[in-house]
Image 1 (cartoon, one colour):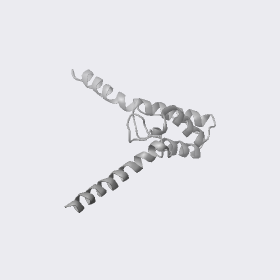
Image 2 (cartoon, rainbow, N blue to C red; image 1 turned 135 degrees about the vertical axis):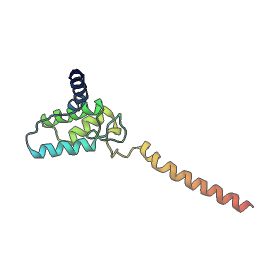
Image 3 (spheres, helix red, strand yellow; image 1 turned 30 degrees about the vertical axis):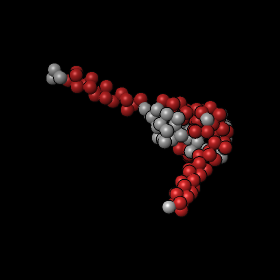
Image 4 (cartoon, rainbow, N blue to C red; image 1 turned 120 degrees about the horizontal axis):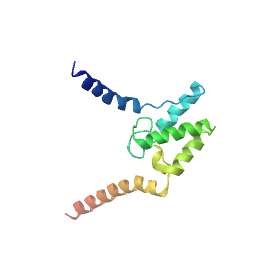
Length: 128
């Protein structure tokens, strides 16, 4: 009986984090909720690298989910919400970034290195 207050305190302390991570967002209809899910799965968490904001529990992901919800409630379109997030967090926030000169280099340089390495190997074997 003397351990009861301590056990009760332990249960309350352990249960608090579970309650704190729940986002409650009322939607007007099922279509709006589905659009919210799709958007949050399409946007990447800046802190977690390879997690979407739907899967991440980071504070920035929570803030981003809330902002997506707020923009949806304002009547913004899907593309307007994505454009807002890209303007705020950069192209990294999307899993499908646009093709820019920098991203072209990321695709071309490894291929060029393989071709150059093959050429060096062929040139050295011909000399022998």
